[in-house]
Length: 260
Image (cartoon, rainbow, N blue to C red):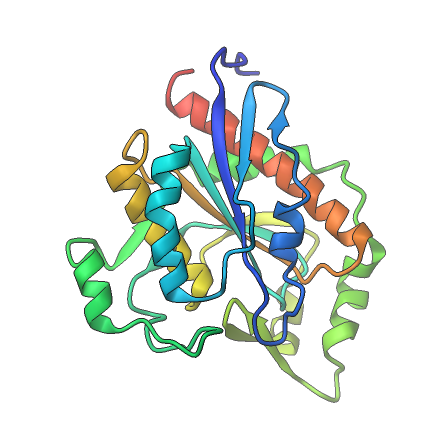
């Protein structure tokens, strides 16, 4: 086991507010229930309000937030309502969301994106070692008690039946639940590279740029976690536990990367 760092590692956490079909966003439900510190000199700075599912408020928020908090790691949380598992996303692309209207009915124009990110690659990947993070995260969550409501059969029965295939929200995109049913297995926490093409992708890309330009280490030490459509207090409590273990895994890997 890596030694505990003597200095504080600061982790910024955000969650999203409501959007169409999701009046109570579990990403904010989790973020708002997290503690402000964890064992091992880990300090969590929770943004005190749900982030609006809207482009321009996100762009207005991030620069000042990163400058003020100066986090070592940023963790943004969003909901993927068609999944029953938790996942950290590897990459995001610019431009894939610019013409999808947000909760304010606004789009993010191509010219705005080019003005902000014209010097940036089409695709960005986090500088965090997600392979190591997920391996540790899976070990840490082995003893988490999974609510029966999130099992494959009961979860899918809430949103689809064999005779009525439906599509459900996936961060602004859609996922055909029945088509994907055979691919859903028992890995409750996992690596992913499907951040979507809406505000989840938008905030992830925007903050990877912001952290690399104005963050403490000018690295893309940013993570994005998708959570399933948690509704009850029991489910949200599990979400909090899983997120705490993710933070621990992120910090451990980040410290190893930095030789701490």
